[in-house]
Each structure stands twice: as C-alpha cells, then as structure tokens.
Image (cartoon, rainbow, N blue to C red):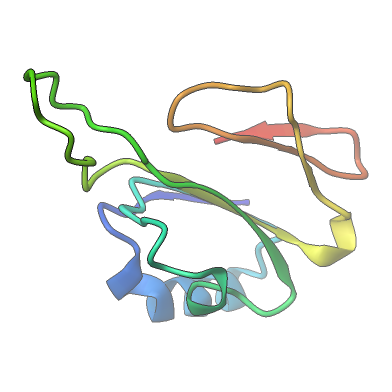
Length: 109
C-alpha cells in the first residue's frame, strides 16, 4: 500500500506512476489531489488500476454570497484491477471515500 498527501497531484502523476511501479503497490491512496470535474479519469489513470475519486465540489468559504468551489481537498484511491474493487456506497463522509475488495478488507481514504 502506498499513501501520500499530494498537495495537488496533477503535476506529480509521472512521479506517482514511477513510485507505484518501483514499490509494486496494489493500493494507492492520495489526499489533497485538488482535482475537479474538468480532469477526466483517462488523464490520471495508472495502467492496471481502477480509479475511485472524490473531488471537492463545494466551497469551504462560508462568506455570504460566495459560490466559488474550493481548489483544495479531494482524494483518490487506485486499486489493482485484480482485487475486484468496489466503492462502499453507505460511506458518505465529506471529502472521503471507501473501497472494498475481494480480501474483505475495507480501506478508507
């Protein structure tokens, strides 16, 4: 398993792919991805892995009249296809997601 706080992942994807290959990780959890709906899964994919992502789609600035979306937050979990991962639907926590795989181990990121 590989875990990191990326503080914006997009410009570090090549480094991430290299680390996953080097350490032969089956599960990769990254927080603070700073992704949004303009970034498609194909741009951030890792061959042989399924992507589960939760982008921040809300504002953290509570000022009245501010409708902007925060540029921070977000998380992503990459799980090897061979583990047959599925998202856990009942886990509903802001900026978080959970995934379960064949080994019956649940991972929260």
